[in-house]
Image (spheres, rainbow over the protein chains, first blue to last red):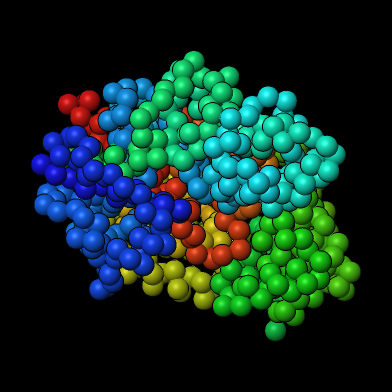
Length: 252
Length: 338
């Protein structure tokens, strides 16, 4: 059986194809380009599978930002939390965990006990604790995201509530002569600090980290203060799409 | 023509009506107006911060734009923003009668406050009790709508919200209000019950975003309890010995522990599966969420409204995910019982 999963993120669309529960194809497309180049509209959004080079689908499941936005023709929409939890099941084999997904403008945290979601929280109003913040700050520092994510020592405090004000705060620190390495650490640490209020309500032993920010070495390191084990998964960015496939093959 | 007097929240309107006033709930004027955004803009232009509760700004705009010359300002038992709002309104030439729900929440103190209030308006307890008896007939009708929601499953969550919240000022005319309610009750009774899988409670201040009621219905859920709206309608007024007891046995303006006693009762009576706790952005009530989540043994989702009068995509997503989780929990626990 072939199941297609699509996760429509704020920055990128993640696409995974599974055959008999094995991932056989995966790809990422920027969200704008996905809608522009791979979709048609006829009352509902129709995904052009041919252009995506995907065929012979038995089932298709979509997730992303709100049910309405992910209501693609012939796809069954499921909410993001469900998609990520099922992705977590598939990628770790665990039944009890905390899942933290940090995406472009979303942070989600979910508690899973005995295979059931028992609590969840999503960031409200403000996206200053998300991937986009790291991107902006890396731009200000003129370093790559990958380079910035390596640094976790000698962080100085960045206090602004607003991510835009943080940029000028950062420039102020540059002017004070703080080293680039230390500034990289500071950015990572400030994101971690914004996450802390969420984490305190979601205690647990094992943390599964997903989403684009999962590849940030410093964040992982900081998070290991709060959990016994940070469970690494192979495809943190494809977790939602993988969850779509897995959910589809199990329940539809 | 009876003189209008504006309200910033529920106060003993029995006193005002006895004194010949028509109480007008400024919250209701603000939120039901097509110009609701205009009222907010007026307040912001006059210097109210962006990072301030929208209800305060809406009340301000609604008061100035609707020719309200006198208001009752609640200076204790509601938020400190209201206190500051009253000062600005006085600056604009509006006459303010202060009222307090004493923080001590002692019957003696409540009685003292209401007696003061009666003196200010020059009415006797006899006159006030007569009005109270009359209003209690209308309150009984609002209570009937509530029962049609959680017992008969016939009234919708929105109707439950609307008719109870409207009894804060009886839409300015209690006789007309009764006629409307009786008509509505008759129509609701003739319906077939609609049972959805999840029974939800709505707690916190009434929403800016009243589309929330319809939104959850599409996700197999019904609101069968509106906490604060129900308090505004005084469902226990008929059992209250007198006006002092009525406003003593009222959970909105006092401490959270007192509020929790009633919440626990209703969670049980109405067999709730989960609670949506609505708070207004920048409101201290978001802090009460900490206490509520710790003391109430039921899943609670805290959502926040700001300026928009419809739900935004993010809040919809959070609601979807929360209700989806509740559905799964209910399904699994039903299987466990088998």
